[in-house]
Length: 411
Image (tube, rainbow, N blue to C red; front, side, top):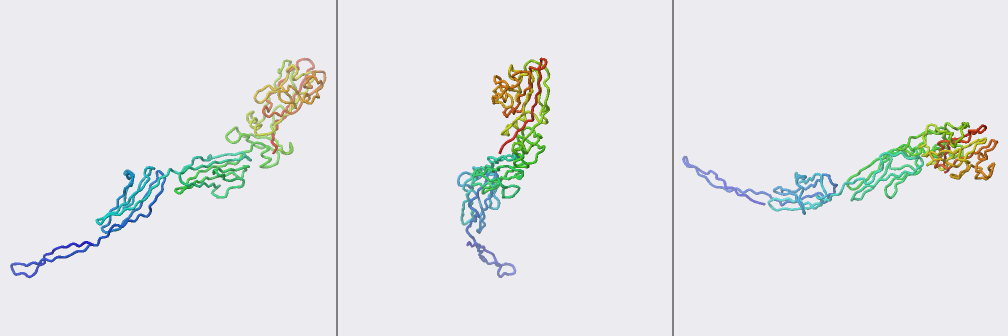
């Protein structure tokens, strides 16, 4: 407590001409209190570029003044403001981290307290799933989600805001969402949410309705009714889908993809004699050779029936006939024989009309004969072109028949 004394002149008795005065001292008392500091928190954590605020208040008489300083280095002046004792730092950087000192001071002294500021890099996704994906039905789908932070971070996956994920899906230890045997029921919006002590971030991925690669897949996952269906063997973003006929009863109900073309009927080979002089290009209906190549790649088996009916007309003897693969390779084997053998089916089974030749037609006699069988090497199918010769002389004749392309997979 401090006392202040003030002297006052008071008028006493006076005469008519002369006033008389007396002096009186009056004492004033003022209460004083030493500063007392209140710092609600002694520790703050923040991300870079965030604004932070330290609150600091004080009591005392006279009211203490409050100042801020930093134990090591300086308070960032251009991004700092102090108002009513509260320290605000805008857009903090890593260098702003450290110990800050709040000081309250009046005429009786000063008092200080400290607060720790810790700055961390922003929480971010190091690996994010694609924004949109169209999977193959029945395929396994992996959606990665990796967050990066110096603080402990948790990852949570949800579908359409629901915490329960659909069947045949789970989150792996590395936070990847795995969906196996993808079905139509798996389509929808999925969210990967990362959370640490400071904030939550999220990223979304849209799973579209799965595409089907073949009739075998349709048979397994969708329905078992034969009919026309659209398939997309190489998936979304590749070649365009195309329509095929699905035969769900053939090949022990495997779901056979059937492709038609313009040369399926028995066709007469016009007369000419040189090797390969007759040429028939095969045009598949509503689909390109590139699309068919993608079908053969996703199928475990492909086949195409081929037949040549001959009268005094040879195939491989003299090199008169051959077929051309989808990649324009001249193929020297016939249906039922192995690639590169130069034989027909009878040459493999040792049942040809003349055992010295690998095909019935190569006997070249005055008898109608035929060589036929299935081409099964799917790396060369479908047949792109047929070539024949040795039909220029009187009496020489030939007819070719080429079946539909059929592809399937066995579960």
